[in-house]
Image (cartoon, rainbow, N blue to C red; front, side, top):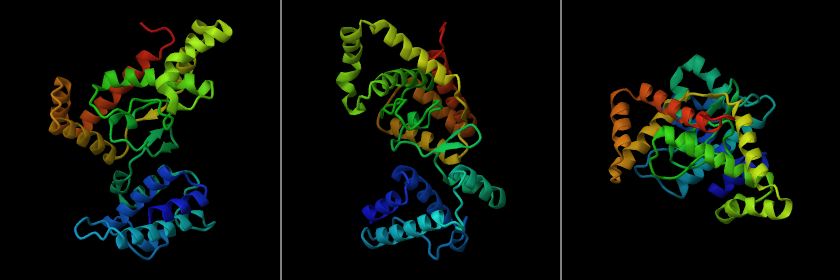
Length: 276
């Protein structure tokens, strides 16, 4: 079922991760009754109840439904209009049906129209307010990092990833390449220091155009909140983890806003051309 749906997305020119995020959002809306099947040009709802879920048959049912939704997206007169992106499409539906529609959609926002489904890691780094997302310019480790520090770690990753990108190096080799690239540049051109300085300057200039938007979906907030609770359940006793859990327990929206801005602060203070 997964291969069938993935092949359909590929054949229609969609990125599989992005399409997976959009389809899961639409199916969630269908399952909750926020959108009716006929409004999306389909005739069925997904099988989303884990109780009694038939792995083979129900998975195939959902895959067939997913393919039908994709067909509706690519029709010239289809009911799922993604010409200006899924984020704008979600806003258009939410204006008619309520914000609950957006609150089922996990995505990061940039400026007025930019959006993307996050990389598939259950960690706050995947929802960070970076100037470029989707290229692993962020820390996506599984352990809690205080948000201000997470922002700084994101900035470090951005600079390191830029060194790979600029030299055409596959990031799967980053474990050795990030250490060796400056030395290679120095051996070949004698410009190690200039190379490293230019990477930092490039990152700073990219970040100067950072127009990230605070999480628009309640699902983003729950994504982070559940990560924090999971860390606590697994025995992480970091004092800041306790602080943020208390904040989220008390008022998760305002806690999320402060958490997001702390990441933002760490990014900007690290990528300033003339840091203090």
